[in-house]
Image 1 (cartoon, one colour):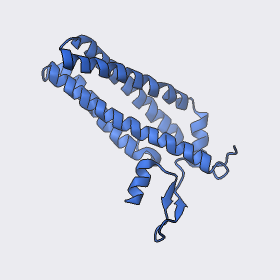
Image 2: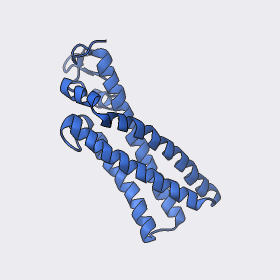
Image 3: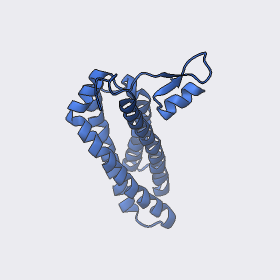
Image 4: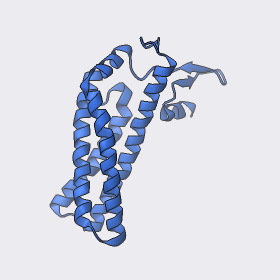
Length: 184
């Protein structure tokens, strides 16, 4: 259970096996070389810009979807906002895959971001299902908005995963700057 909590919390310290209360280091999120590649690539900046843009589009779209579900008004605005959110999602997924290739040597499912990438596939599938259902006329407007909400719920979970990884990377840098080849 402690191992599960450590991985969810992205804590840089794990429990030492066999010793009650003893702590030991877990492997840093990035190797020294991966960290250097991360810091050198422009794709890191692209991700840093797209992530808050996507979150902003999500908040506006969520408000429009909830407004439509509550009032029955604004279907077109809600639909356009979902399409905009999905477009930004595709952009961040493509550029994120390129970033992962540059930093880790593979487009998806690198060791450090394996579970985030797995969950990202669900997020992408639900957003894509919305587009397919909209284009094919599957379901009524209420059903489509509920599908969008399911996609958004998965996005929130995935965003939290990535925020925990960012926190873990910052903890690594604070805890082991010299071990990572950096000084404060």
